[in-house]
Structure formats: structure tokens, C-alpha cells
Length: 180
Image (tube, rainbow, N blue to C red; front, side, top):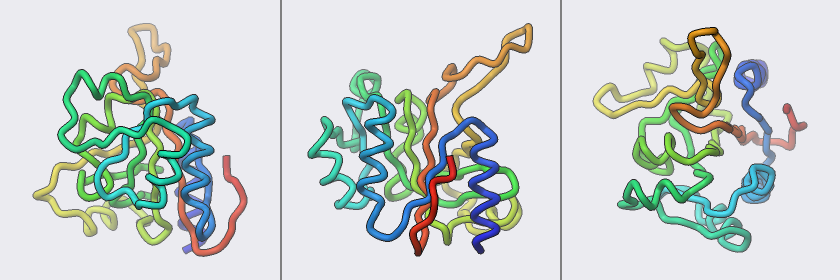
């Protein structure tokens, strides 16, 4: 599994996202550090984000509950913290099914920074293997790096259709080195 997780981290990095591998008990501190690095002020946490993470964030930032948040309020949030349903190693893609810890789709598309937690056990080899872990009746968002598009002259533009910054934290069972 370590090679699979390593491939996932490498592919996510290829998309200009930041990837850190986090050891046991290090998730709250890693999320706070990532939020600070992004210049966060107002941080949204959907229902289901671990309480230890919310407590650590609350000590450093203005914490916004994502439950029932409207568009105007969401527009004033600069960073969202979510979990994921699955990560795809071969493509470096994160899949959200908007279940616990993930919030509704707008929560992951409006804030400028998305910090996403993927557990090592959630990494699948390829798209078919990932699809077997997903419920086709649930809404899904596939994320491959920060939002990007190209203009007519093929100049890359980031942040037009979603977050300009994606920071992925891969939680592992042992302390690992920073991949970014």
C-alpha cells in the first residue's frame, strides 16, 4: 500500500497541489499549519470533520459551520477543510461524495483554498477500483488539483471554477516525510 499511496501523492503534486503525509495524532496540527500557510482567516468545517481538528482550528481562526450556509456567507469564507471518500492513485484524483466531513458541493467550490484529508486506506489504484467504493446514487465531485482552465491562447488560469489552492493531507499509520 505504501507504493500506492506514494503514487497518489506524486500524482496529486503533479497537479500543482501541495501534499503532506501526516503521522498518527498529527492531523490537527497539520491542518492548522496548512491553513496558516494559505493565509486563512475564516475557515469552514462541514459536519463530520473530527472534533480535534475543529478545536485546533477554533483556537487560531474564525471557524464557520457549513451547515445550511448561504451563498453570501460562503463567499466570505477563504478556506474549507474537508475529508474525502476516495483517492485515485493512478490519476491523483480526490473524490467527494458529499457525505460526512465533506459538505455540499458549493462548500468545496467557492472558498479560495481547499484543504482535504485523505486517509491512506481510502487510496484506490485506479478509476474502476475507486468506482467500486462509491455509491452511484450519491452526488460526486472529482478533484484533480486546484481549479484550472485555459484561455483561447492556451494560457493556464487557476481559480476560475473553484479553489486556486488545493492542499491534501494524507494520513498514515506511521510518521512520514513531507512530500511537497
